[in-house]
Length: 108
Image (tube, rainbow, N blue to C red; front, side, top):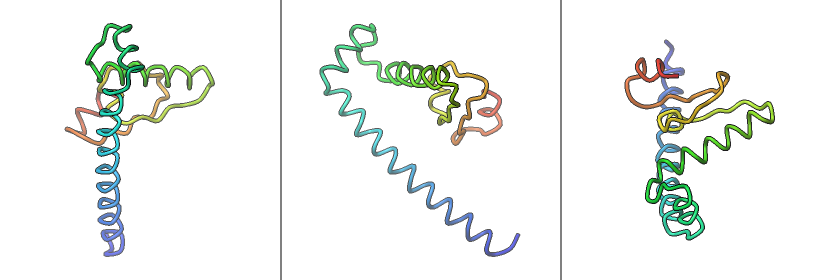
C-alpha cells in the first residue's frame, strides 16, 4: 500500500470519528428535547411506552422506512435502527459500524 493511501485512510478515519462525535452530541441533544416536549410525552403515553425512548426511536424509524417503501424508495440506515428491532425491506442498506463486525454483519 502506498504512503498516500495510508494517509488518506487516516484522514478519513479522523473525519468519520469527528462526524460520529458530532452526531452523538446532536442525538443526546435531541433526546433532551424529546424528553421535555409535552407532545412527544403524550404520544409516548398513548403508545404505552412512557419513558422508553428506544421504543420511540423504533416507532419513528419504522414509520420512515414504511413511507420510503410505499414510495418505492430504498432506505439507508445506521446499525442502531437494526439493533432497535425495526423491520426493514431486503433492499435496505445498513451501515454496520460497531461491535464484532462479523457478528453484526450476520444480523443484516
